[in-house]
Length: 101
Length: 172
Image (cartoon, rainbow over all chains, first blue to last red; front, side, top):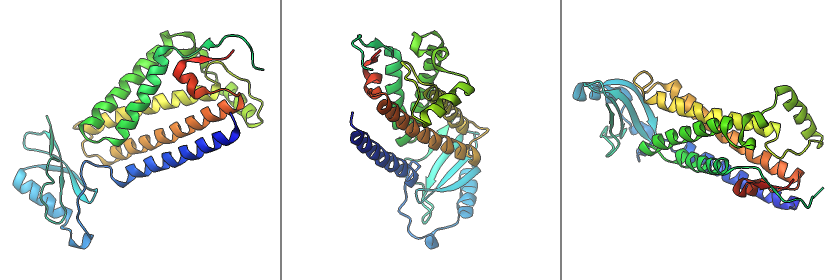
């Protein structure tokens, strides 16, 4: 096989590799929120307080993911829960709540 | 250098199937999220576990004892590669062998950290998530270097190692 063929394969491979790698770093989670600039966001602390009071959850961690707040918590029964919330409205993003017994 | 002898059967059916099946599962796991990501991850661990077992009981060229060499002789081989004097191996070459071990170990570590992240002890624990992501990135990097090594060895010895992993045959 000619050297130039390998060069082309290598370059194509490099391009595909970088492309697929960067596509992962853009969005890593289950959901994305069209949440605009952070100045309009409500604080994670407020979300935490709301979930403790309304749901009785114990919050493990709240992080940003895809423009949403992603919550790791345990519910009253001690099950592990994972859910996404919109940072402006603090509403649950539909179909993102999962419970592990 | 080219001989008229008939090609040798090097990679058995299990080696070839597990290689391409594992690659497909890992690519899907990389992109999919949620339940699919988890089950595909466990499937990848199952494939690797079977491949490790096969490395002890499988056909001659599938066995670790056939291709894994000491760090010292692997270093020697590496120096030969740099000056373009490395001997051709019908099975895996010593550097490729260590890459295989690294890839297999990386997939197992990835599966372990992924599972731990779902347990009560590590639920939401940031460093476990970071470790899992770091291992995913290192697997990606290793796979890329693996492909580069395959292409370079193919070029050096004028043989197509990519198709050899499809039909399993190599020249003498």
